[in-house]
Length: 176
Image (cartoon, rainbow, N blue to C red; front, side, top):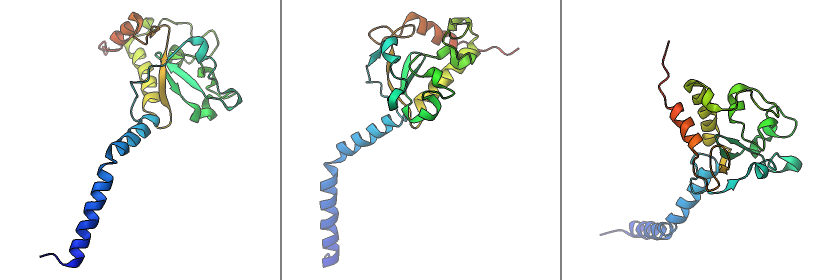
């Protein structure tokens, strides 16, 4: 037989379990939303498609949002305004796809001399993928959509060019 204290504890435990068990789906949604927001999980359900013109408006002007694109994936980097905001060292990347410039280091409005990514070696293309991965997994930057153009079409589907880039990225890098 249970004593009074054990009975009270059992009632409290049962009440607590019943109350919070019904909230479990809500808790899971909150945690998932947080993980997506901090970039721990890429939210593949985001289907926003940006035009180059639209993306060019996200440069942090007047404390606005700062977006950049790498391999056609658009990331919100507003929390990095000290790096990407107006007048900073990486402001070149704000409001545009800077894929080739990430590798080449050429930060001019004309962009890098080699614009066709397929002209780079597989090892060089993999370094571009590492930049994309940096933004995808960064704790305070997050995925917000795709850029219509070279890498994605108007429906957000990968273009043949992106598929070719990914295929070349996956080629074996032969050591000399």
